[in-house]
Image (tube, rainbow over all chains, first blue to last red; front, side, top):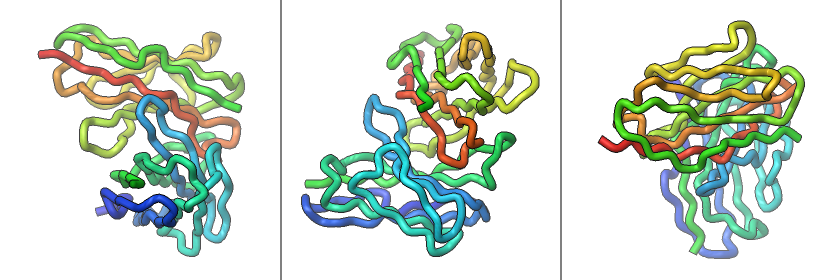
Length: 115
Length: 115
C-alpha cells in the first residue's frame, strides 16, 4: 500500500523546545516537500529536496531545519527559533519533477501545538 | 515570485446548485495548474490538473476546470454540487522549474453545501 506517512498525528510541545516531525514515503519519489498550513493562509513551502543529501529553503524556512539522508525519509525539525510554530504541517512527494509532472502526493499531516 | 489568488474564501451553496471557484495566478510563462481538495479529516488530494493540450480538464467527482491563458485563470466548476462536496479547495501552480521547487498555493476556499 503505497503512500506517505507522517507521525505523530498530534504533537504538543513546550515553548523553547525543538521538535522533529517524521515523513516517510514508499512511492520511490525523488522529490519531497514540507508545507505549513494555517487557517486562511493556504499552504506555504518550508523546505524541499529534489534528491538525497540535497535540500533547499522554501518561502518560510526560518526557524526550521531538514535532512535528507535516505530517499524515503525527509524529517522536519521545528526549532525554538520559529516564532509561531503552532500549525498543521504537511509533507508531500513527487516523482522526478518536470513540466510534464509536478503532481504532489500528500501525507495526512501533523498538527503541532506549542504550549 | 509566483502568486495564486482565490477569489472566494467562503462559499455556501445548496445541494444541486452550480459551483464556480475562481483562481488566478501571476506567472506568465509555461505552468502546470492543479486543484486540490481537503475533505474534513482527510488527506489533501488531487482533484484535477492541467499540463498542456485541451484547456478544459475533467477531474474526479464531476469537477472540471478551464485554463484561460490570456486571463491567467484556472477556474473550477461543477454543474450540480452535493452535500459530500463540503471541503476546502486549493488552487496550486508550479512555475518554470516544473515543480521542482514546490507548488504555490492559493489561500483556499471553504465550501459548505447545505442539504
